[in-house]
Image 1 (cartoon, helix red, strand yellow):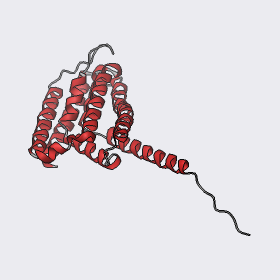
Image 2 (tube, helix red, strand yellow; image 1 turned 90 degrees about the horizontal axis):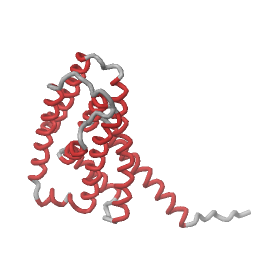
Image 3 (cartoon, rainbow, N blue to C red; image 1 turned 180 degrees about the vertical axis):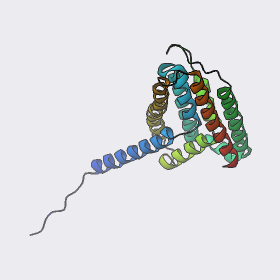
Length: 213
């Protein structure tokens, strides 16, 4: 007895492919956003010093800055690096200078915490600038758009950027929350100064990696 082969409707195939694509996009965004890096180190420090809510300004700025870069890369900004390859060197050294500047600020900061969560934390601009002068953010943007929107389809570019924004914001916010949690155990001035110097050392190490990497 012969069985009739099951025919999968074309719409179901498209839906499966689309779901797989979105899951892959989400996994890429999560892996790129939640892993340790200069921005997350700064957000962690902000959470310790200023609490969770004030640090959300920095989180939003870092997220918006990266996603704007991601969107512009998808729309063709990366072609500037092909036309003007020296821009890569400019971005690299600007990133090194900014990281060292933030490291010095942390290392020389007092050991006092903000008195409440209404205490003003780092600005949105700080987070955005850290993304734009971070060569790794450029590489992640180029790799992401190359993997998921290589054909330049506007709908894919915008969908990837929107999905990335949600996941990136949540991921970086986790670091702010972790800092706010650590805040409970770091009331002693000497402990805060030690924490500041450890974070400063990590930022300086990130700067060294940009030079040597």
